[in-house]
Amino acid sequence: MEKLKKAIEEFNRLHGSEAQAKIIEIRDDEAIIEFKGYFCKTCGLFDYFEDIKWEAMEFELKVEPVEVIEEEEDFEKGRYVVKYKIHAREASE
Image 1: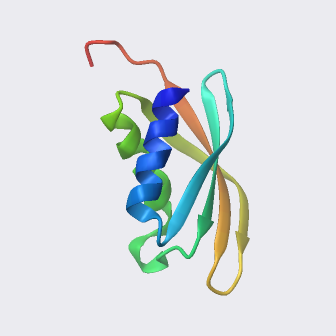
Image 2: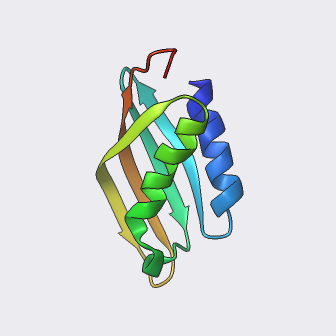
């Protein structure tokens, strides 16, 4: 899915010093995205996952984070795998 790839590229451009995202899998109406990095936890960890939603909207794609399915944390570094729901959008939206 090209639009989601572009949203991930934009996320990585904006958040690259703190976190990087990578698409692990896309199937039907779901996407699995891995996040790795030195997340600013005072900013709100879940905000990083929400930012993909906002970036995707710029490319006329509606996605919603629904579940953190894997989580690994070291002292400063983390890895999270998040499941997203991909919603159908009308061309007029």
